[in-house]
Amino acid sequence: MSRWTGILSRAAGVAVGASLVATALATPAGGYPATPGNYPSGSSATMATGRGFDTCTAPSLAALQAWRASSYRTVNIYFGGVNRGCTQPNLTAAWVRGATAGGWRLLPTYFGRQPYCMLGTKPHRYTAGTAGSFGTADAQDAVAQARALGLLPGSALYADVEHYDRLNADCTLAVRRYVSAWTVAVHQAGYLAGVYVHQDSGLAALSASYNSASWARPDAVWMARWDGNPALTGWPTAPNSQWAGHQRAKQYQGDHNETWGGVTLNIDSDSLDAPVATVAQSYRVTSTTALNARTGPSTAYPVARSIAAGATVAVVCQGHGQAVGTSAVWNRLTDGSWVTDYYVSTPSNTTFSSALPRCTYPGQVTSTTSLVARVGPGTNYAASGAALPPGALAYVMCQGLGSLVGTSRVWNRLHDGRWVSDYFVGNRSANTWSAPVPRCP
Image (tube, rainbow, N blue to C red; front, side, top):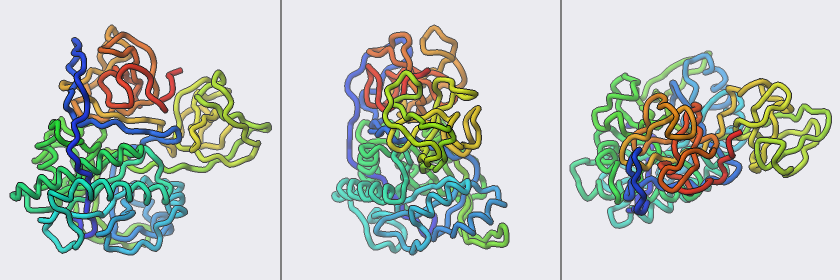
């Protein structure tokens, strides 16, 4: 495991869900721990794929610019926690904005309290009796630290849980309580809950309790196994059906030096297909007159405020909306309002810009069997692609009406264009619209 991190997950035994109505598609999981995220309006999730690296101290922006010559595109940041060992002279809100503007995704890791049987020397630890309260407290501190750095709601925050004595049943209980409490508190604040774990201890424990009614399940796992293999499937201690919806990262090579662009860093190497930080980016209004920001991605929505020509706007993400000029893309701003992308200086005014994430509001799949995704919002539409296993994240872009499933006619359009019934997605409602998800155009 990394010598720097110390993952945490909040543990509190939480049984989420009540009795749901069975349908012909699947059975809702009344006891599944898919606690819903409480997303505010100016939020969105961000996914990262490909290679990443982690260092003890966040590199300078100049070093990151030099490392654009590498294949890495995600950098880890140790952004808080009582067991964090390295100073972070570079890690400020300005650095976060600069790194993001430079094309980097950020993987936020919180080095909080560790299990009492941790195989290491970190001083701040928890027991089975204190794990729940410490998991909640660490999560709340992590959210505060993340907000101070400009990591917006919808970001994934990873608790570092270092390798521990996996044969100690009481200590494994402590880890589950801590991670569960972390997950619940992070979700309540509108963030996604991740954990960094060793394949033989934390990952094995969380895999064994994946379907338990007693523990809230984290949204993503970042596993350490220094075997040089970056594969995100075929893990020995967690089947491929778990954390299967863009929810995995792997630290596949430990402590070593690499040099790119003339800059040498000591790093661990990672592969990712997982949620990371969401950071707003600044662009300019290009219209010659004031631009109306609206409550939804269409001119049919009320005007929330007017933005002067040439002013700077903070864009969180991009979504589908009414066509304006050459573009049907709309930008969601940090205050939750929407502006047409056609009049904003993003890299493209005809389609989505790769520098910005799609606006998504993930919820875990709550059915006990895999959830069929379809080409349209109804059971009469054809199935499309692989079904989403229980616990997978459904990255919801917008919602529309469709055929009745259980108690809901609401269907979710996913980031890849497919549709799933909202009845089986763990968000704020199982029978009506869920704010702040927009309506599909």
